[in-house]
Amino acid sequence: MSQSRRVGWVYPAFGHSAHDDEDASYGHPAHRGFADAVDADPLLFSPVSVGPLSGTLVEDVLAASRSSFPERDVYVLENADAVYASPVIKRAFPDATVVLLAAHNVFGLESYDFDADLLPKALVRKTDRYLDAKLVRALVRRYVDGVLAVSEFVADHVRSFAPRTPVRPVHPYVQPEVADRLDDASADLGANRAITVCEARDHKGVDMLVEAWPAVRRQVPDATLHVVGVGHPDEYEETPGVEVHGFVEDLTAELTASSLYVHPARVDAFGVTVTEAMRAGVVPMVTETTGSFPLVADVSDELVVEPTPEAIAEGVVEFFSRSAGEREALSETARDLADPFVADVQREAFVDSFRDVLGAVERGESA
Image 1 (cartoon, rainbow, N blue to C red):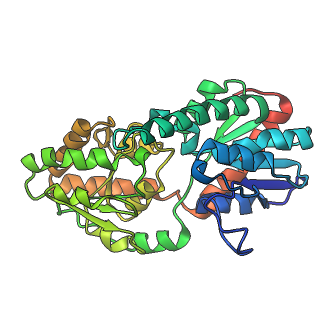
Image 2: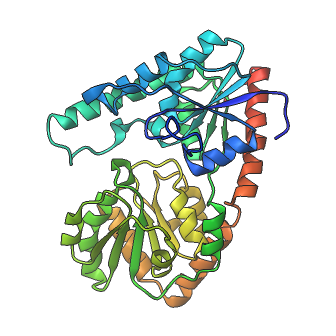
Image 3: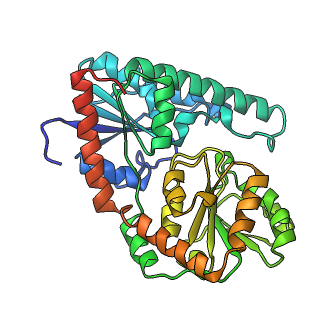
């Protein structure tokens, strides 16, 4: 994007290899596309060692406080972890505009389920996430000038704790090479086969989906669930009909062998895998606490469920009870609705929202 403003994109150093490899990629791939669209320079926290406190807010705070950033006119913060850099930036460059790209971390993990953790880990983890969310929200209110939220769901949440901050929605997209493969694929709509794709994280809610599966099998005995992604426990396979695949390089075969994609999140900002599945013609089902739920509701209201094992089971059974014609109609609708979630469309929309939120900041407008 041709513009007079110099833009820096602030990434936390944790989990990124950029300090060891100048060509490394970091941040969400769609976010990197957004950064490119506004000609942003990548700026990283300096890494710190905090021993057993690694992965807690202590690491975020120390890394931010010990970092320095080159002068830019606009700083975009890559999700909530980077919000700890906002006071450092504002003290150094008080006239700069600070914009948060808000995704799932902005919710705070105090709203997630920690039953799988044993004491004292559960208490430490829950306390850390609770305090992290409180601090991030306070910093957003004080130091962040505007917010770009990756869904209306996230935007509404940000407005709830920062009502005077301008907020504009943006949407992540399916990577071009992935979109090309999925657009040429066809889902097996006759199979009573469901799939979910994600890393093993509390907020993704896969444990609830596995817990729901015995109830599904009681009504649909041949129903199978395929869990794809790193970190999921092998114990999931003790549940009849559940298979754990681990990491899969190309999801096309796994997706197209399925008729239903389930995203059972307790809280998720958007869920790009939902639009990936839709591009392949796999019918999506999501919880009402998943940011892409308005898109899925446009396929069918019945495909948006409460984030509980009981509601998830009921939704899966309802879909598997549909006729071949009904499944085909839902599949075609899903494909059509996923069509705009590609790089060129969403990067252009991001530029518009970026300019819009900067204009709102300059005019002193609120959310």
